[in-house]
Image (cartoon, rainbow, N blue to C red; front, side, top):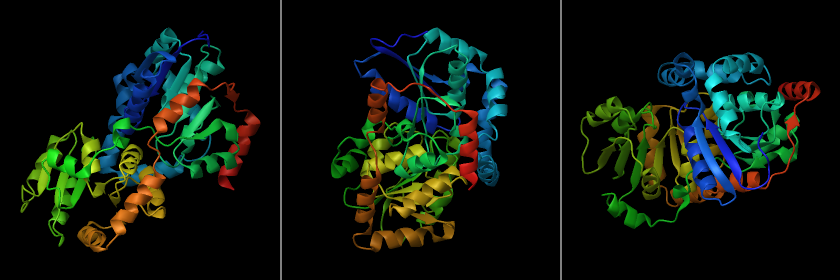
Length: 396
């Protein structure tokens, strides 16, 4: 068992169901590694320590449903958002398929574990409860709202994106001192100061013309080709950067859109400079995933939301619209109208930019690290009585 004195061994656990959980883990890893209070950091994609069938169930199935059945994802998100409804069955299934992961965790014997996905959080919770591990367990929620699957029967602390989510958890019955509003961890590069004009020139963009940043997502499953088709109808003169992620198919579809002026449309695949493109842009056009949204906020970048995944992304959209940071296009036919209106209304984009910066929490990773390295809370076992109260509070 890990002893608690001296520099800490930190275990970060994520899962490659989408890319957001991994990116939050990478941001935390960078900040933990730079802290002298940390002896060693191990960042693990939990799914890499499972069998192929289980791994595909979590990762490939999710991507397939995003592409072909987003309405089903939305239905499942709502249907499963009931405290403790699925946790016993999920926990048994997860433990049956994560033997190598458990061995790796025991071998590392961490003082601190940070989970950016609920699946590995359940594994750590079970090991702690059984006395097979003695590690501080914190859970970092990577969307703005809190889904019931993030609930754990044994934990030390939750980190959430916004004050409203903390209020929700407190009303469910979780102790206030166990909930920290940190924001969603992002790479510090997104909040580093940069000059927009200099960046535009460096990226081959006209420094005097509005820039739209169109994202197909890291997995390339967004509607970027359709968006580009609509942007050709804009009345306002703009230049567009279209990021297609790792999907060559999507990039080919975008590049085949007729009528594109190469001087105004810059089509990219996967890029490691997304932080620079966000800082160079006037408007982000894409899906509001938790990590992407947090990155745009840190850059003060307003959003035009298209095709949010039903469930978590729709809820992320609600918060952005409520805070005056985004517009949402329910129909692709209205995209050019909405963007023209934004660009032609004096002061509106600048106000949205100010709103984004005010709502942002660019230091989320540092807040998580500093909190955990000084945390002395004992582990909380969620009793049967408290679980019942949480379930009842959720349906009142």
